[in-house]
Every structure is written in C-alpha cells, then in structure tokens.
Length: 161
Image 1 (tube, rainbow, N blue to C red):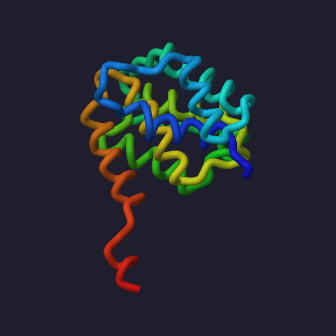
Image 2: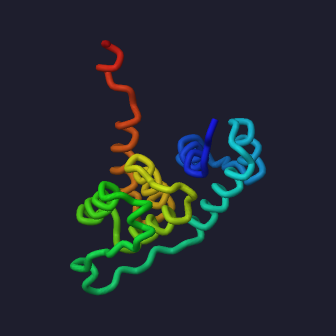
Image 3: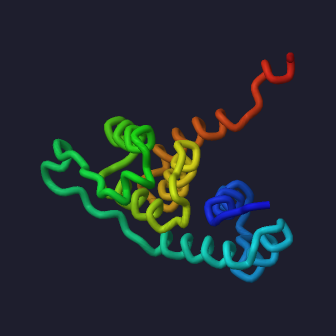
C-alpha cells in the first residue's frame, strides 16, 4: 500500500483533529496509533512535523489594497497546483473563506508536501487543516467542512444501483 504524508494528515484530521473530547493524544500515542493503522514511520514523522509547523505559523496580515491584488504563482506552484486548484483558491478568497494570509499558508503547506501534484480534493483537505488551526476562521472552516464531508458521504443513488 503506497501511502504518503497527505494520507497520514487526512487520517489524523478525520480521526483526531475534530474530536470534541479534552483528551488529546500526545505525539508518542499518535505515532503508535498511526503505526498500527499501517502508515510508514517516515511518513508519520514528516506528517507530524508538517502539523507542528502549521500550528506554529501565523497568517500573513493582509496589506492595504490587497483585495485588488492578483496572486502570481511561481513555476513550481503552478506544477503542484493545477488550474482547477488555483481557481478553487481564488474562489475561496473571493467568497471570504480565505484571506490573503490564509491563502499563503495553504500554498506554503502545499509546497511542503512531497506530492508532485495536489488534486482539488486533497487541496480542500489542506485548506480545512489550515482553517482549523486559525482561531478567527471558524465560520469559513465550518462552511468548507460541510462541502468536503458532503462529497465524501455515499449518496442514496449509490445504494439504489
């Protein structure tokens, strides 16, 4: 089974990040649980490091007049984020779900992953993780979470065939 850092992050987010209990597992407990789930130790270590850096980062404050500015992506960013993914980020920002600062955090987190290209579903999970860790972004997080979870739920039509 080929797993990567993003798979570990998505597993962690689904199973531990949105847990309402006060008993958060420590790093050693998470490593043990992820190992038991079948993830390679190197991917576990990189995923936990990725999360540590995400939690420690502050969003870049919006500059005056930045609403009219357009983000120019580097060649490497364009290779990692296809046109659909970049369009999704623009859409999120235009609808107030991402600020210029949180957009930059998302791009930074994407570029740190070892994937050659991030598809739109993976990008949505990364955006969720970034918004989850931003204290002032709970409304945006909730709205995007509804979209992501609705897409993952099996539809009634799938059971009728």
